[in-house]
Length: 162
Length: 149
Image (cartoon, rainbow over all chains, first blue to last red; front, side, top):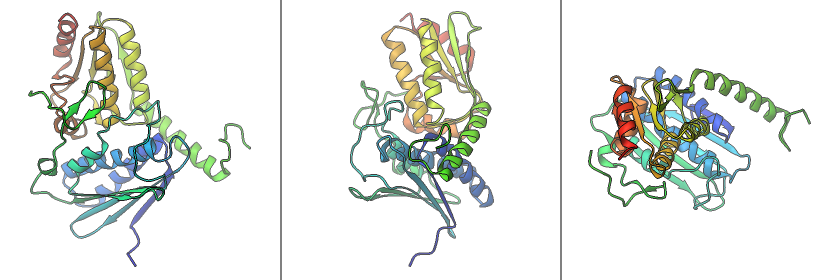
């Protein structure tokens, strides 16, 4: 049996919950010896994971957003979970059109990243962040592509040099 | 059912929602998005504090209202402390609309940029795309010339 998480947040999967999760994460990060740059990346990655739940998990219906934060010797593992219909493409809620940049950002900003889930069983994004870094994870997993003509992120497009 | 309660919602869930609503009301007041039209032909949308999927619809409204005036638009992120991909989506849509109407569109940051703003702009490579420049005066000048290209 796995150890219980140190912190579990359970909130409605609504836009207003995302900032509350970020604030809770800030408070927890303050209590741990994180580099400032890691805290910034962690807030961004967790925001993107929570936003994915709000936008995609429940097709506009009410649902739950759960966030576990588990501190260990070398860092913090954060799991963002929904009880939605699982991983498959769904239309975004119309008022919050998705750019499609969430998962590439999570991959670039976290030291480790895992996506779990299957059809009908919800989705979990599990991210790990070490307290200090000797390298930038964005160098290993850079965000590929740029925005396409349709306004969505196109991973195969070539970004302009600048 | 209490007034304002959502269909099928329990009392506990309604209380949770009311609590969340008051938190976010305070959030919106602490993280304003204001239209500054004192620069004449270019409207500046000033974005302060933390912004994400919750405030992105407000940003979209302000950007649309600014573009409706027909001139250039500058988005000033100097006092922003955090922006996510929802905000980038709003900025990119406004940029597309501006380009279609041949209106200038430029984003500016200050000399001291918060990591929560700098990082996402850097790793997405959107600095030359949006484009993002340093300082409001440079942005105003760029927005004026951008629309005339």
